[in-house]
Image (cartoon, rainbow, N blue to C red; front, side):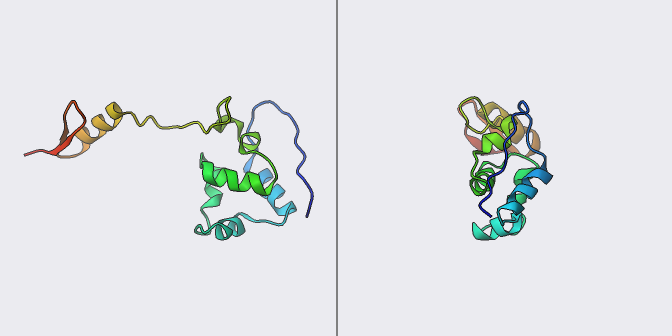
Amino acid sequence: MGRSPSIKKTGHSDWVSSRVVYELRLVGWTLRKLSSAHGYAPDVVKKALYGPYPNCEQIIADKLSLKPWLIWPSRYDHNHQPIRRRDLSSSHVRSRVSKHSALTVSDNGNVKRSA
C-alpha cells in the first residue's frame, strides 16, 4: 500500500480516468471512499475525473502523494493555479440577467425588477 505511482513525463496530457482509479486502488482508496472520508456525497470526488474540480483534484492528488497539476496539467496555469473556465465578469452576468428574466441591470451593476 505504500507504493508511489510512477510518473512518466509524456508532455502535458492529463491522465486518463482509468489510470487515476487504478493508482488510487494501488494505495487502498476508491473514489467513493475518498468522497465519504471528506464528507462529500458518494459520487462527488468522481467529478474531478471528467472536469475541473480543484478541491477534489487536490484530495485525489494528496492520496497519490502528488500535486494535482501533475495529474491534470491542462487544468492549471504555469503558476500551478487552477484555470477558471468561466468568465464571470460583470458584463457577462449583465447580459445573462437581462436576456433571461424580467430584470434589468443598470450601468453601475444594480439589478432591478422590470415593471
